[in-house]
Length: 395
Image (tube, rainbow, N blue to C red):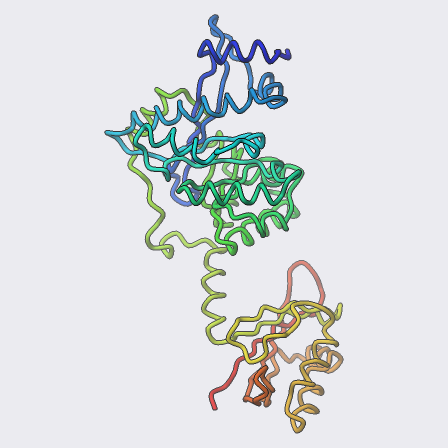
């Protein structure tokens, strides 16, 4: 059934719209961490109207803004009731229509301040679709919210409009992964690869992550291997009325992030730590596919040459590298790292090759540089792959 805007506004004015809370839990420890506020319409006769039957109608006009502010005040009242118990942050969804609301951040701050609450107890959730029409205004909006002390979460990432460019530029704190990306129960290889990639780039961008719609132990187990920060879904808790949520909070201590990450180390976080350690000694790392004549480079700011291309053909990389060598070292370097030569070495059973040459830095000075190529095998392909580690040797 589709309701009219007038019926929805009447429900709002008659306090028939009720805020429910869905808890979020730390992925690795399954401890309560925060909650999301979700609006429900409960008629006087007890009939529950699903959000899908009235929220889309409200979003067609500024009525949705009135609902958002109503929910915000209700959330503040709930947080106020937690004054003598553990206070868990609560996120509130805001429509993109607020993008054009004058003094939005000032109004938000005034409401929260009127309840004498810390701003960090309220998280603002915004769907990425909000930036489609006016990207620059969207970024300015988020910056103003964060400058006021509120955290910002990007909701429903992966639901259809996802853009890596968007995530790269948006100054948000949290990325919420849409449940549609878990549709195959995290048992499909392609789904797992996509999810692993999302969590990796989100964490490298210093964003916290939340997986939405988690319902099975298989999904939870896989998300733990991805270093996902928080879980939201039926596997832990369904949305609940305020009284039940407050009772839940009363029985839990505020969950801090694990102090010793090694106690619950996940493969992804372990890799991140490992990469940080490797970069201390090897400021240039190059992944090369000799079979397909391609490479991808990761360069740290401390390496001698700053203008190494980040990707391209392997043959072009070696030509450029050769040109940066001392004239007396160019022939040795080119002969060793020639792609055909490396393929022969691999066929002969060689597992690594290394060389020390003098490489010209951006400052025009030649420095001793060690380059070591390690042959590795991928379980996804029969391609011949090398990982090159390069370091500047002390004079």
